[in-house]
Image (cartoon, rainbow, N blue to C red; front, side, top):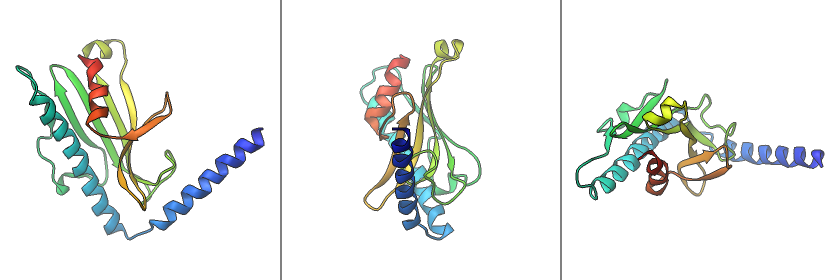
Length: 171
């Protein structure tokens, strides 16, 4: 049975490498995709905050940075987007992969990787920060931001519904 598991794992790696090889493009194209993806993540956060704020009477969610353009993306180093309100925070920290495309941590080829962190003051006092892995995946059919919960092995699109689920326990 262990041999079957090893064979299945190897087969997945071979398939993932084949998919990644199909996306071999020049560095400028990958850099452009990364800048667009970073702007897209900021747009998701801004639309979520705008949607929630439209229903709030007294408080508001703030997105930082308030504006994000392709030139804001840092190719080398960590990029950070935050949604915050009243000491409750959700952070999106992400960076470029070492190679143009990777399948090292996620089977779908990705060009950006990082983490979503959600916490409030009480959680920090207990050293508890909820996290999800974050990937910008590129495939032949569709591209987009995906999360992966390493505890439950659940994955899905990064969208307003996910952000609401992550932020709700903070209040």
